[in-house]
Image (cartoon, rainbow, N blue to C red; front, side, top):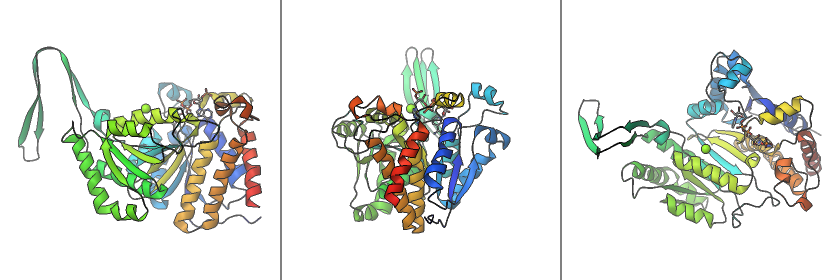
Amino acid sequence: MMKIPMTNPIVEIDGDEMTRILWQMIKDELILPFVDLNTEYYDLGLSNRDATDDQVTHQAAEAIKVHRVGVKCATITPNLQRMEEYGLKQMWKSPNATIRAALDGTVFRAPIMISKVKPVVSCWKKPIVIARHAYGDIYRAVEHRVEGPGKAELLFTNENGETIRKTIYDFQGPGVLQGMHNRDDSILSFARSCFEFALDTRQDLWFSCKDTISKDYDQTFKLLFQKVFQEEYQEKMEAAGLSYRYALIDDVAAKVIRSPGGMIWACKNYDGDVMSDLVAAAFGSLPMMTSVLVSPDGNFEYEAAHGTVTDHYHRHRKGEAVSTNPLATIFAWTGALRKRGELDGNDPLTDFADKLTQAGIDTFEAGILSEDLAVLCDPAEVKETPDALGIIRAIRSRLEASLS
Ligand code: NAP
Ligand code: MG
């Protein structure tokens, strides 16, 4: 069989531990036999990040800006224990944070749904995608513990030295204080990434905050989203038959619970932190969450939402057969291949990505499941729980059948 050719490269970002093992298996079994794979490879395995003083992470991010499509393996974010384990020069920053900052992007997390795993919320039929603004608010707040009576004020000094002063509270006793901020440019980028993603995935966009209570802060978010919508995206959204709506966060929370799903829910930083875990848990399984980083100018980096599955890696190294779920990592690859195909007008590549996606779903629907899913299903529906390579080979045989 002739391999599918590629014109432009995908930025391939390798990672750590069990997901690095899966990465190679997925390439060897599911991609290289069928695609004349063109990637620009960056090794973000922790040892190489350390050897390059983390320059490789910055280079990978810059490469995504050039080639517009990346696929990333899960990577270790070092802590003290990892510093010792790997003998690191420094506690390098999270690669995801570095890449997100470089691309000024927003992360969208969506569950992979299979009929055997029922969402806890029984009316959810389609994925709910959470977009979390990843800058500012309480994550960059300045806090102060007030020990006794005193007056707290908000003081702003502009560049000419003029000041604005507002009383926050006249404390009669102990209490707490917090000062937080956000920036228009960050909110605008967030809004643009959300509209780009809505158009890309053909889903409606909902944005929520609390402008009735937060009359300047949250109101700014609401107005900037509205401005980006009206000035840049309204026509495109309408032409695609898609809608944008703003509503209060409590209102959206109540509506989402009673909806069939199928929308993107854009949240402020803290709301997104909470809602993304809530929605992921309610859909059933962390290993089935996908994640894509989208920049406001339409660059895409696909990955699995889970980490490097350390415990499985240690068992794998001891020679045990481990049933790690490869599907979210496979979907990261199919996301990137499909996007590359779309941007390059390479229909065979897009078609291949769709077929591989379907082969993955079909394998799970046939009852060939990783253990994390098997425990969530009716036991009568589980046929086999092979190790990761066994699952990947089962997917390959379905893929070969659909390609021939
Ligand atoms: P994790 O690797 O996602 O694993 C947490 C647990 O979830 C695992 O112990 C496993 O449960 C289950 N799990 C996750 N993915 C699975 C899969 N594909 N198949 C089957 N089970 C799966 O998170 P973590 O243990 O908190 O973090 C491990 C390392 O990953 C850390 O060094 C962290 O820095 C890194 N991390 C990276 C990313 C990223 O690059 N995007 C994200 C998160 C964490 P059982 O053990 O019960 O089987
Ligand atoms: Mg969280």
